Amino acid sequence: MGIVSTVLGFCGFGVGTSIGLVVGYYMFIYFQPTDVKDPVVRPLVEQDTKSLQRLLPEIPLWVKNPDYDRVDWLNKFILTLWPYLDKAICKTVKTIAKPIIAEQIPKYKIDSVEFEELTLGSLPPTFNGMKVYLTDEKELIMELSMKWAGNPNIIVAAKAFGLRATVQVVDLQVFASPRITLKPLVPTFPCFAKIFVSLMEKPHVDFGLKLLGADAMSIPGLYRFVQELIKDQVANMYLWPKYLEVPILDPSKAAKKPAGILNVKVVRGIKLKKKDLLGKSDPYVKLKLTEDKLSTKKTTVKHSNLNPEWNEEFSLLVKDPESQALELIVYDWEQVGKHEKMGMNVIPLKELTPEEPKIMTLNLLKNMDPNDVQNEKSRGDLVVEVVYKPFKEDEMPDDLEDSNAVDKAPEGTPAGGGLLVVIVHEAQDLEGKHHTNPHVRLFFRGEERKTKYVKKNRDPRWEEEFSFMLDDPPTNDRLHVEVISTSSRMGLLHPKETLGYADIYLSDVVSNKRINGKYNLIDSKNGQIQIELQWRTAA
Image (cartoon, rainbow, N blue to C red):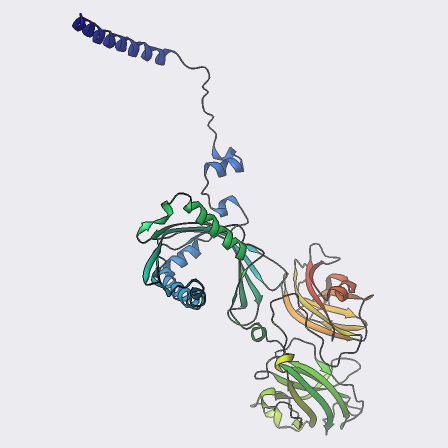
């Protein structure tokens, strides 16, 4: 019976299995489930932003965000230079780390810590996009999206108590969004004095760690702990608004901050040339330093006098005594028409001995061309007394790190008053009906100053500085700014036209010390002008 039961059991299993497979097949073919719906197929253009980012998480930022620019050129540049950057970066890391390690290891009773191997591998970081911020300050701000899945080989060996241990870092991955700020921008190569680096979010850091040849990251819980610890430590040091500062240039030298003061006394003129037909000349002297955008100084007019006595004193800020020179030009004043030039000369500051007064008699020349035969004619002499006083170390202006800092007023500023500095930076979207050759005129307390002309430009840049010495703060005053276009052709029709104007009230400048902003031009469709105002006091 046992044998028969076994045979019947196997036959029943085979028959039952066969019947089950046949029934299941027919049910799968002829019966469809009612709770399953056909998938909805839609083109990508109909998907919303969140759906696209979920479907394609690795889309570059320049695709997802229109504010970011594509930087394939930068990735190619880094790829070509990476073998050299690898060596340079590793050498710099060793140089920086060596004194830090030497300072820290005595605290932990470690004999030595040194790099056995240090290389960043053959795979450079890649940048998925870059965003540039435009500000009114002298700075350039860039935000980058960086991904680096590298193959570095970093081996650190430590010795303590006669034992030696090695730690190896492999398979490093870093995803970060750094903000790089170059400031202040200066007219000396590489055109910025410092680099400030911040992180806009916590970085993603992943790596392998081998301790004595074993994978330490395989220890339960250690991988997550180390990863979060690194994120928190890096974020505490460099997460915005905190930053890493890298000095590039000495800001005071790069921006050519004042190096001293030149005191000039215009004493007299001797046997000046007669210019007027019916009488003598009406001379006055203009003086300024070369390579300086500040307005010129000038003496009073001495009417009908070829041997005038001025005895007038002036103070000029010197930025570079090695390259600057004092330029003196004598003019003949005219009530109507252009003032006629009588002669000129220059005094290179490098020829002056600091703190030593020097009286000089200068021959007036037509120009500074040594080959011009007209300079041989006698045009009279000008007697001046000059003394250059360099700043001492404790008198030198401080660092330029704070772009909002305002210099103090120069020596001789009236007590209770100050120096109002107006810097005309640029204008945008200017539009004239007949021509667009703009310049700016400034009107303040009866004084007028104007910038140079810029030909055929709707977005001119001047970067010119003007100053007004005041006996009292301009709390209730306003500055009238007018943009004028002058025809470049000698025509009688439309010689000038106004491109717009703005009135700037100065009470905020006195309280805030500095304002840098853009002002909409009245009587202009879209015109704007950027002007920086500073109120400098001796205190």
